[in-house]
Length: 311
Image (tube, rainbow, N blue to C red):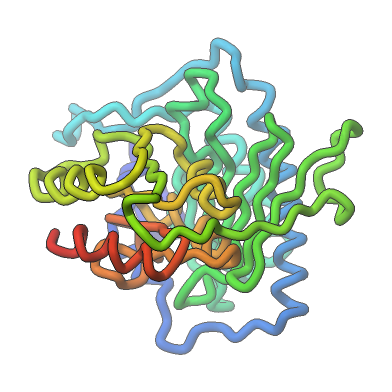
């Protein structure tokens, strides 16, 4: 199924890596703290809107499509699920952005890239962890980032079923937890987050969404050598694992085969809590790919020593 997004025609969810480069600038937008605060509040509005489209379908017999490819177009088919909840959530967020900030760009998992004139781009993954979503596991989340042309300056991971919203600006990170009334934006229930002090691989708890992410023998070899060095390793978690890193329950998240919309919202959350996020070569994680997030710079360097051999 071909989708037209602005002037760009793409096979839905087959977003070329070039797209992230189309919104990268050598002169990123400089935002004042007041502007970041305004956009952070707006991101919360987007998350609340998305939740209205997502929650009615969670733990129901929702229909699941496979967007992993199209045999009729000669595209290899790997199971990549999408539901009406994914589509409706992204659609309502895009509509809100276009009506409130028409000069802003949008890059989303389901509907691709709409370039804007401001230099700012909202990067959306309406349900990160659709496999978890369709199997009833509450470790999925709605990811919302604002990209300034160089790096994401704010990120939100919203888990509306658990009434948890994780917010990061790169300089701070906090979780907003719902009261019994269901209010999720009150300052009274903000919990500041800080990564755990873990400087040795032998003390680290490491998480990875799935071994299926590791596509090559080189990736697999480096990954499992690293996993052998940590205290404990678990599969599963999706975006929730990064937030547990920011909250001090996990020390490393190591993954591969991510898209920009899978990671951008999580970068300011981890960094705002004192952690480090990069690709396996130690460079910016903004485009996705192979990602390592660590609780401390020391732990990050030790993980890179094992992972950076993969080119």
